[in-house]
Image (tube, rainbow, N blue to C red; front, side, top):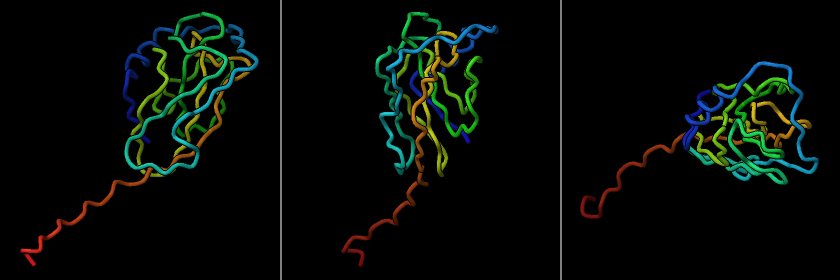
Length: 159
């Protein structure tokens, strides 16, 4: 599974590397009425080629990694992840755990054809999940193979 992420993901990953610090700090409290969701694509959608993913958050703010302003965090997009998130550990950084530490609220994904799951998790200044966990519903999208090229049309004069 290979995901190609655009729109500042390099900055997000670099930011992720500078903000991780080992330690057994308590989880950052989340706003009790906060909710995290995927605006687009819709659950069950069939998509051909690359597609945008738009992140939604209610009753909290989005900021860059490292910012400890209360009731703010940054997005992490989980692609085809089945394991539970460790509540006291930073969210991993790899091709399945995409960090948006510059405060991005959307990205563009290029995934291979097939079924894929997407889920958002909000991370605090240190990339750790909030308490309680702020995660979107896990959605499934199906990426369709590229269309086969159509044969050239012959003109009436050639018939």
